Image (cartoon, rainbow, N blue to C red; front, top):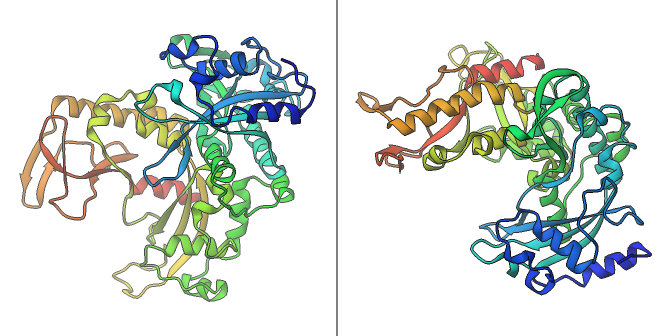
Length: 458
C-alpha cells in the first residue's frame, strides 16, 4: 500500500484506534507469543500491507516516515506511562563516527515517526491489546537541540575509543541502549581494540512517557528553556547558569530575593527551592518538561566544612527476593544508574555544628550527574555480586547492644555504596530469601563518594 501524503497515512493509522491485534492480524503472527517485535510486524503486514524488511531507509520511504508500534502501561496511581524505551536503529560504530548529524543513520531513519501506541496489560493474551493512539511525531525545535547534543555525546565517545563505556545516563532524551546481552552482541569499534556491546539509538522511556502525558492524557508540562538557549548550551550548562547568580548566598537571603518562603527542614524545601529559582514557582518538578523527558531526579547534598556530607545518600528500598533472582545486565540497580540523571543541589556549612548550633546554610551550586559506565561495570557490579553471594549463602544476623547487625556490604566496604536500614521503626521488617526477618534496608551511596563528586563545585 503506497500513500501519497502524510495526511493520507495518518488517516489510515487512526482507523486502527480502538482495534485489537486479533482484529488487525491476518498472518497468524499474533499466536506466536514468544516472538518479540511481532506486534509491529502485524501492523506493517496486516494493516499497512507492506513486507517486513530491515532497510536503512524509513518504512514509508516515499514520505520519509518510520513506523513504530510501542506499548503504554497504567501505573498503580492510574497514570499512563511508557512501558519501555522506544528502540530505533542499530548503531554502526564504524560508520556513525564518520557522519554529521544530518547524515547520521539516526536522522535519516527517524526524522519523522508514525507512533502507534497500544495499551499493554499483564496476564492477558497480547491479541487483546488495543491501539490507543496514532500520532505523526516530529521533534520540536527545543527537543531537536537536546537530541543533537545527545547524538554528539554518543559519537564523541565512539571517536574517543570509548564505545564500550557509552551509558544511557550520558544523554538526556536520545539514548544508546544495549541491543542483545550475549557474546554474539559484541561489536568492534573503530578507535579502540576494546570490544563493545551492540547498541541502538533509542528514545528514553522518560521521553516517551512525557509524550504520552501530552498526547493521550492532555497534561500540561512547563518548559524552562527556549530553543535558541539550547542551541548554545547543553541542558546541564543551562541549569548551572540559571542557578549561578545564587551561588555563595545564604539560603535565607535567597528566599528573600526569590520571594520564596524556604524552610530547610521541610520536605517541600528542595522542590520549592528548585522551582522558585527556575522561575516556575508552584510547578511540580515532575511537570517541568525537560526534567520529565530526561528522567532527571533530585537529590539534596549538604556539605560540612570538610567538603563531605554528614550523611550517606539514600536511594530505593531493597527487594532482596528480586536481587537474588535477577541478572546483573537487567538488574534494578544497574538499570537505575545507567538510565537516570541526578540534579545534585548542593549546599554547604562554613562552620561545624559544634562551633555554631545556629549556623547558616549556603548554596554552592547544582551538578547534573550520572554514574559513569566504568563505575557501573566496576565497583557497582562488584557490590551487586557480593550482595547476591551473601544472600545465596544466607545473611548472618547478630544481636548487638545497638540492635541486630548483618554481614551485607556496609559503609566504606567498597568506596562507593552499601546497604543499611531505612525504616521508620525497628519493627518495620521484610523477609530475606532465607526466611529470616530483617529491618527494611535501602541502597546508599557513601558520603565520601558524594564529596568527591561535588568537589568540582568549589
